[in-house]
Length: 202
Image (cartoon, rainbow, N blue to C red):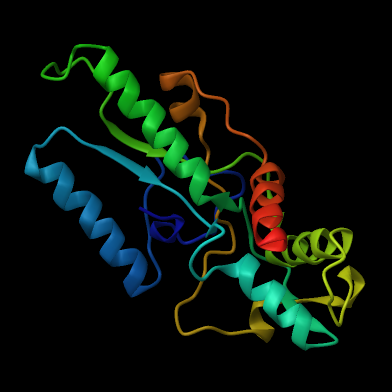
C-alpha cells in the first residue's frame, strides 16, 4: 500500500494506528484494498511504503538524471517530505519477513504477527534535496550533465500543482515493523547510492 492513504497534515511520522484520510482517487483505492483484505478474514501482511525507486522502470531518480542531462536548471518541490525507498529494500524486507513466517512453523497459527506495517527507508528528505542528491551522485561519477546540484531550484507545492495531490508529509513510522521482526532499516541514501551505481555504470 502507500503513504497516499494519509492527508499529509501530521507533524512527524505516521503510525499504523493513525486514521487514514486519502486526498486522491489513488489513495482511496489503496485504502479500499487494505480494507477489503482485512474484511476477507484472510491471514495477511500489508506493507505501506512511499517514494519507491529502483534501477528498473520509471521513477523520480531516473527522471532527474534524464532532465539534468537535458536542461540547465530544474525546479523541484521542497515542501513535501518523505523517505525515498528502494524496490530492493522492499523486496529484501518482504523476503526476510516471509522467511520468519516459514521458519516459525506457525503457518496455520494465529500467533504469527500478521497485519499492517509501514515499510520505508530510514531518514527524511524533501523532493528538492532528493533531486540534488541524484545530481551530485551523477557528478561524482563523471556523468555528463548540463547542470549541477546548485542548479536544482527549490519551489513550493503551490508552484507545481498536480492532478493528484501528494501528501506534504509522507513520513511513515516503522517502529512496529522493526520491533516485531527485528529488522534494521538503512538510511535512504544507502539505497540511492546502490541504485545510482547501477544506473551510472550501465
